[in-house]
Length: 477
Ligand SMILES: Cc1cc2nc3c(=O)[nH]c(=O)nc-3n(C[C@H](O)[C@H](O)[C@H](O)COP(=O)(O)OP(=O)(O)OC[C@H]3O[C@@H](n4cnc5c(N)ncnc54)[C@H](O)[C@@H]3O)c2cc1C
Figure (tube, rainbow, N blue to C red):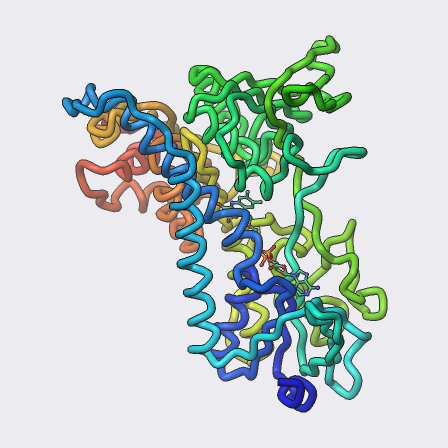
């Protein structure tokens, strides 16, 4: 192993094996590059597979089934007795999914003949004669060197903590909350981005008393304002206590759990007590201990600055995924930015990642899927904006599913009819948004989409009606 690592000069050495790193590795191999994938953990897959997207969505599906069972009688299905939650089995299923996909990555690394190296990577400086040297500290402490013509930094991010706090069995980040021995009976969630609202939604479904405390004036603050408003309404209907414009003052541990004191939007002090608190106030890029200070890589508040090919100011040094400045921290952004970087390295064709073409999905109940400009952003950019909105209440498939909440909102440019943004809250919003991403990618117009046939009865017809609504011509509302 030492011989291989010491003597080989790889075309690219990738630091981190999350969705950014492993996608770059496999696509790099497909493009004919000789690839080394360096990962400090003993498993591949990063945050996404182990403590992010996959385990949370597994739990959300359990929550969805639980929800359906509560309403089974409505669908003429009975004879269950009282549904009971077997938390150990819930955890085992979730862990089984993670293990299956971890093995899948082990297989793919071998299939693509990627050299897998376990250890903590640090750059030793800029490339010398076109070759970068990366120090890799193995779990046992021994240091070896990996040489490569290019490096891709894909070290990801970690949960930010509130000042003075430390994660433990009561103060949780995404890592601890995914490994709980029991579902909490009460939970305060600090931060109402995707991570916060998803966990709040899961544990509310399982019966917990949930309070959300958000500093900004609205929950899911990156979404269109109407989406935030609708989610707030529907969360409140589900019995979730939503506090916005709220500044957390203290988080204290009590004998039974925790006590969160905050100043509410009216300036009043409020106290929420619960078994656990989830701190979901954003994710910090892991760029501190990568040896970057010895390179030309430039950082902006800890995030790597890159060009359209994901290349940093250091020639041959690329950054992808959660550490990149100016892109949302999402698994599919990591994956696509990885594909762009290796295409550039291999001299293949690529298209830069466009921020306004990235779908954002939040898998709470109800789900949110959005892409492109919000109404406010479109107006700020100077567009003459025309909006169409269609409620799921008018969609026959939504009636069949018994899931009528939410709407589809189209933001378009009045002059040419170009669709600038699509914002969906409601059933299967995270799947429905795929159509809108393709429409934006192809610069589709309202008129083109009004004459695009959507199968009946499907939830996608709500998009068809929403395009029509832009012209005041929805059929079903
Ligand atoms: C609870 C939660 C739910 C989420 N749900 C979704 C979702 O549904 N959809 C979505 O798109 N996104 C979701 N995300 C975000 C998503 O997980 C991240 O955007 C994604 O994992 C980023 O990928 P990455 O490759 O940049 O980094 P990561 O996945 O963080 O991987 C980085 C890897 O680099 C390794 N590493 C770090 N430093 C070094 C070093 N110096 N040497 C060697 N190895 C190193 C780490 O061990 C890690 O394995 C979620 C995040 C959280 C926390």
